[in-house]
Image 1 (cartoon, rainbow, N blue to C red):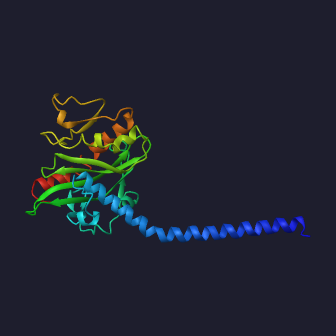
Image 2: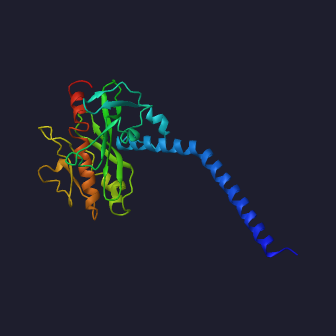
Image 3: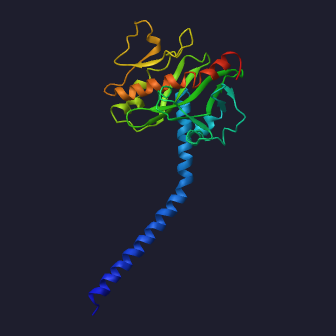
Length: 258
């Protein structure tokens, strides 16, 4: 008859073997699934770019639609195109790398970025005549609980908003998470970013915007019950469309090229 100690040892051996087998299965699954996860993440990124530009077609593959999008890298300090391969440039990693970014002062860092990368990717759409028709710009900033990452798309006048959308955030569902609400996103098209003096006038305001009020073309309703998330969106718009963001680049485009 087996002793009590033998039974305990057998139990431990079986448990150990099961743990090892399960770990191996999970590891193999993670390795096998990683390329699929990476591809899905890439497709979602492209989908959000197309959606912000009002170009997304559900019956056409994302990769096929994205063929019309030209990707370039811009030097944020000069507003000019940089000689950098966009496929090899990781903007998120660059924003954390001291060699590729700079620390923002407290006064300048209204969007809660911490560091600002030296270069940014931009996404361009040309019309049938080869002229620039739309431009999609990555934006990010801190809300209530998280950094919101998304895109703002502009018409060829570099001032009229086509759309705005976020592909990543951790805001509260039903409150700050309403940045994903199609109704709220539908308030952005047609809004204007800059006033006649080139100042960023576009803002997210508390409450509802009266369309008859002067300056309504620069204002978007705030998110109900989510003041800090609304403020976060407002701040990131002001930062990224301002002098430290894409303003120099857009000015260069206005003058005929970057």
